[in-house]
Image (cartoon, rainbow, N blue to C red):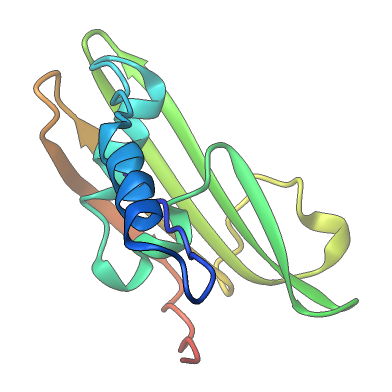
Length: 140
């Protein structure tokens, strides 16, 4: 899903605001075609609990971000496996990772949680399994 926001300068004319609005309304973004790995990832993310969906929305493959600058990072990982016309997607969330371990695909039992989702050819996504350490409390 794409969202574009445009802010006009104070005092912009009604005609200009309408022209910008018309232009934005004319744009169309094609969805990922069914059967594409990106499509499967998008469908699978809908089966995740709402509390973690936003973590994975921009992630394809692997992403890291600092939680304590210079000390620990969060690692987000997704793996997509095609199985005939269906897909299995595994999402993994690790926290308190040392910076030198961010390329690892291991799921340490004390600071990692994972979800395995099946995506059917019609786009139906089913959470098959969930495991790992209890999720940390997120701020905000």
